[in-house]
Amino acid sequence: METAEVAEAFTALLKAGRFDEAAMRFWAQELATYEAAPGDFAEVHGRDAAFAKAKWWYENHDVHSTVVEGPWVNGNHFLCRMTIDVTPKGGQRRRMEEHVLYTVRDGRIVEERYFY
Amino acid sequence: METAEVAEAFTALLKAGRFDEAAMRFWAQELATYEAAPGDFAEVHGRDAAFAKAKWWYENHDVHSTVVEGPWVNGNHFLCRMTIDVTPKGGQRRRMEEHVLYTVRDGRIVEERYFY
Image (cartoon, rainbow over all chains, first blue to last red; front, top):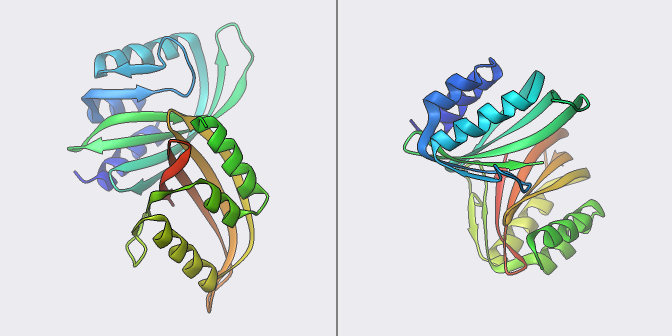
């Protein structure tokens, strides 16, 4: 699959709320994720570690809704914008906005880089 | 300068409408720019070629206003969102939205990648 096809298919799953399915289908084994802030999950290498990070996120946040915009494609990269209505466990409900830059190789996502 | 400092200073100049000054100050000699669409300026290498591209843009578009949001920083990258109220010469006035991903090395911008 070309980057544009991966971008469309992956983002369509996100927009349908099928986040796990999107990850299962498109995350490469060698996926690396880069948060913009320090912490235990600032930098994660490997699909298993990325699933552990996602599990931590869902265990520690009540996500009320997510609006996904994009994808916008350039070369082997694509960009999405997420607006997340979320309550961190024990915290205040808030609206998070972030952009995610994806890098594609051989039809799979090999890098996610977060901007917020 | 660290990436965050470059991002803040460069974006502050853009927000002040000082686009030429931002470019003069922060574009590396080896700057490369990557548009998301084909064309004469789809891929440009070198600061002089990037200035030629910018000159072409301003000669062929009447820019009424530009709103710049960001920067959002991650590693040696930062991201901005531009909303441009523009009339292409001989065309219809329209509102363009784009994201620009910047890559920084040694205190200068070495890559601009456009998403729209």
